[in-house]
Length: 113
Image: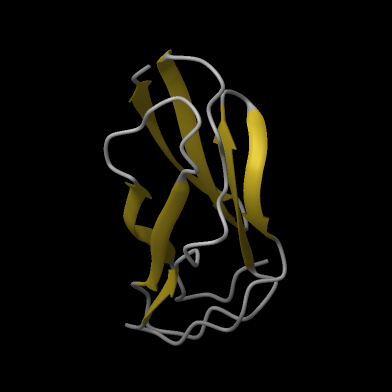
């Protein structure tokens, strides 16, 4: 249950590399921001990142997020979330849940040979 006055939103979502080829190790970098006026306590919000319907990254314990602050999630160079095995259009979905609110960002990745 979220604390009244806290509202966590997706502030940014990008993928590396920006042009994806078959076999690339793709990392998604994202930032969450508390746009509310109160603390968003740990376990009051969670997120999942899906690519082609498969959950490739998640955090269901999350840390406290003070009002007005942003927290970033960046993968180191040797870590990745997803590696395409075939060319074509692939779909991703970032789902942020806080109490009864759900914020979903959907997008496509065109994977080149």
